Image 1 (tube, rainbow over the protein chains, first blue to last red):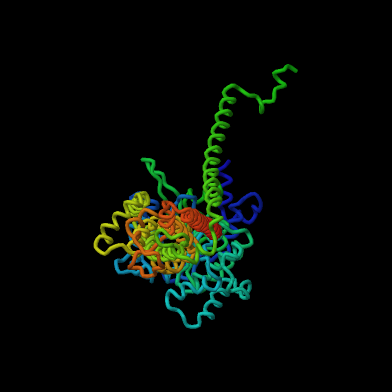
Image 2 (image 1 turned 120 degrees about the vertical axis):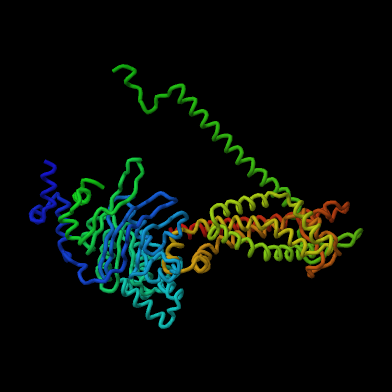
Length: 299
Length: 297
């Protein structure tokens, strides 16, 4: 009987009719709003070939093959411990800061090896910005938070104008324009997170990585951040890690589902189960693990 | 209903639970008693020094230098100035080194190196101050003679671990999410330290400095070897030995003159008040800094 229900909920034809008590149906409805073939004709920003990331020799995520396309929102979803955040952090080499972390396989960014010996992590992080799980504004004024990265990279002409544009872009300008000199810590959590997004956008990156950017926020602030993600993809390539399947179904064009593999010797590590257009993944998952996850039987 | 049923299960007391309760009570009493002893000792010291020192605190104490041997009267102006100068020089030497050491330890060093540094600092903090006095005596005084400069080197060595450890503590409190936030914008580690970490920890570094100053002002042993032969005049040349508060307390208390003994108590009171004030200010500032850093989490 259980099988019957699952087949129903993952069948696209049935989805609209099942309106209540079926999370998967709601997900399918949300996911169906996205293009079915979003990657067509788009440039590849990241290409991952057999990427394994280990901490002190223990693999946290194994053998990932994945391409990320320009001006799309790509979501990494999956249960805790599946290595989705680890993978995200390898894309701007934030893992370099963790002693013992190592990356095997190849990650290329616009065709260039991200871990090449002559790559400058400083330059790389200017192009590949990041927003963290918890808002982490610096204990400085709102203005100085946004200006920090620009000063760092010598973008000093028309600093005021750039700060205003970044804040406008992040949908925060109207709320803070009269108190730019106030401490960033005086803002609410949602405002702080949008400030962190503004800070990342201010240095004109190519890609914005977002690590569960709304998980520490209330529903209204989450809505703000999601709207922002939607509006930013016209100019940026966005990769977002999320626990929240509805969020993924709402904002992502491409969704990659990760899971935890337990091997015979009891060690666990993350694997990429499948990825594809969000509409496919939520409506017609090809792997039983994905189906189990999106129908709420697991995770 | 039997008597058995009437018993409230939440208040039933078995012999075992009674013993446990008693043990807990005993421990609480012992700990409270120990805390009380510490407070009482401090209060007795403050009270007795204040009682004997306060009557001798007057304008002469601050405006007159020590009287020549055998002459009644005199104050500790030269000792106050000497202590101020030597403490300032010691702080000027120890703060930059201590803060840089703490930054290296918390932000740049590998875990193994960091452990080694911390252990070294702890050992240095435990070295008897008279040993550091002899060390500087052999290193500086034997070849160059006593001087305020030699004394301040000895004092700087004594307060270096105090400043470094206190600074380390506050740097470790700065949330790592701030470091990541800065590095993710393309900042180098050094830039992150200068622009984000140090401003966040500034209050804590000030606290560390104040605590160091209070410690240096009260040290006596290293002064014995490095700056204890001096004229009864105000000296401001650091290449000459200077009088100091702790040493003035020592010499005046040894004197047969009643006046000198009173001066010793007054000097002790002043020194204690200074150190106490420094510690309390440091404590309050450190609480404020902790609250500020708490906000960043």
